Image (cartoon, helix red, strand yellow):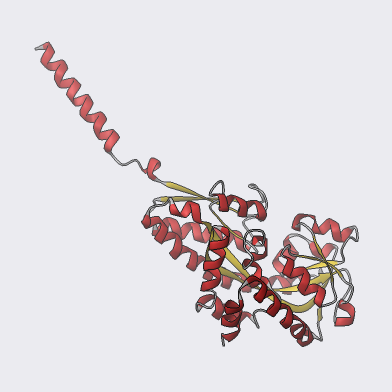
Length: 333
């Protein structure tokens, strides 16, 4: 009798254990994706990445948990690119395309001054397939996927003196993005370009290493560049394209359902960012001017800048094998 009871208890315990082992564990199955950004949660990059995370969790059926590390907690944008390329530490990020110049010759193309005529031209190029080949080549060269292009903010020159003409632009010592095409383009405008880490730019202006930089108004506000460079010149030379990126190596390890969720969420989060970026850019510029933190000047010779830019684009596109991409963008009406 005793042996029979013990045997029954053993079988019940074993069956219960097997049931626990075979039952799906939500905690064990849930995939964690890590995002990284240099900014805080007020910044449009962070808000778009948060939207991306919400959508991935929704579309994957709660199989994914997204953690976003802001304020440079996981390094700077160059670090994120290295990590995504290796498939470690950072799975996704939104950043300036020129920061990919070390791993993709084609990536900085969308940051080239005057590539996009205006915001509407950029929107149509981003949504209509003109940049599909761009995304394919960037992934092939870098091992990093372009899920979608956010952006839409307009970049202007902000300096410690007014710049309203080519004559006043000539000789301006200006911090530029790290891609070589940026220095080449601004040199064609008569600027003395200097590649300086973004985090060091404020001090560089304050100590007269450079006279200013070019940027969007939300970044000017967040980094308080107006304290050392209070004159904004509306060159409107770039409609900023901000790729939402994902590690190709990490992507390939994920289940098909999660991959589909990431692709769908990436397109939608990029579109969300395009609306957000335009609204925030306009609002911040109005506020900075109203608060007298920035003095806003018209740039009277923008057409001449466009003319100076065209041969530089053509040479650059030929050099990096992107002539078809350039033609496709310029053909967008």
